[in-house]
Image (cartoon, one colour):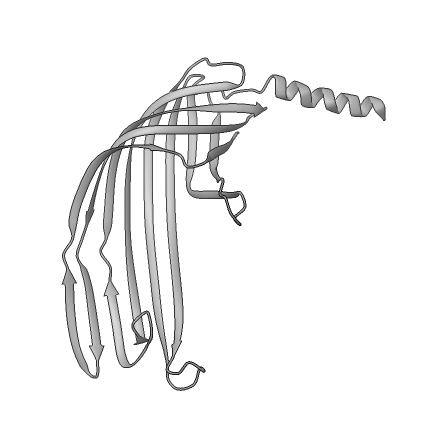
Length: 226
């Protein structure tokens, strides 16, 4: 039994001492760990799928995909005790993101893999809402509301630098910072309200914005090499 325990310990120590970094043909994927204070626990946040394919030991293609959808529904009653008429307000939103890039990795150490990279990204999203006998905050008799939210699209291009630390074989933690340019444009949003049999429509025109900024991951990436 002692020999089995000693052998297992030796294997574990060896894995820590010689953590293997990726080579040509390997694929990595990671999620983000965010650390919060107060009553919140450490949790995994993975709004996007981040993957890399190593063309060479020191060169990797990068792909980011993100699909996010959400919906909510809130019920309202005419009276505080739940009696009388009822109403409902439904909201939904969706977005899609894709990013591609390339990374140059440097020798570093047996466990540390620093890199620099560049990439571009594109995202698009939209939202909508529907209210029946409710305006989203309270019950309203003989009332309907329909909101066709603005479609929003963004484009970004930038450079980044980071480092992955392989603390065990093919498992790493990483941090990253970047400098980039981004632009965003939104279409018009239309709201149609019918109250007491009378309908009205209001339109909010879209717009655009752009800027250059420095960003950093708000957490630590935890990744695996396949």
